[in-house]
Length: 106
Image (tube, rainbow, N blue to C red; front, side, top):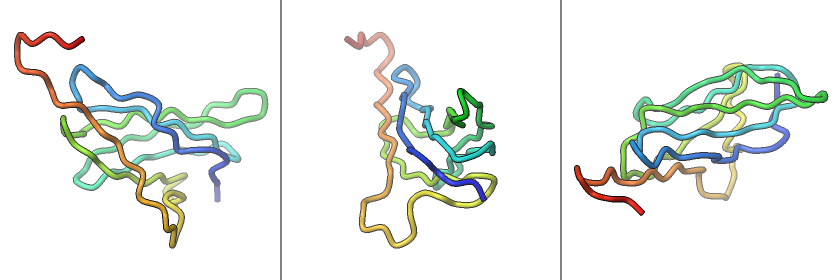
């Protein structure tokens, strides 16, 4: 089974649509990384290798603008995050509200 070395790390949130984000992970071997959110949002990506390290950038789609959405990470279909029995709060993606038509966002 593949394991996490580092991450997950929320790398980017789409401030224009408020419906997608990118999560970064480093794994201990080649695999497919997946991010799942309650309500159906999520995404997956195969890892890529750089100097013996395996990374994935997972584009998470299907998020609601102006929301706080928890997520879990799976590697090759096995949940690896959050850790079982962790006292820490769940990892969360916060998306911005979509501005009204004609509004200028600075």
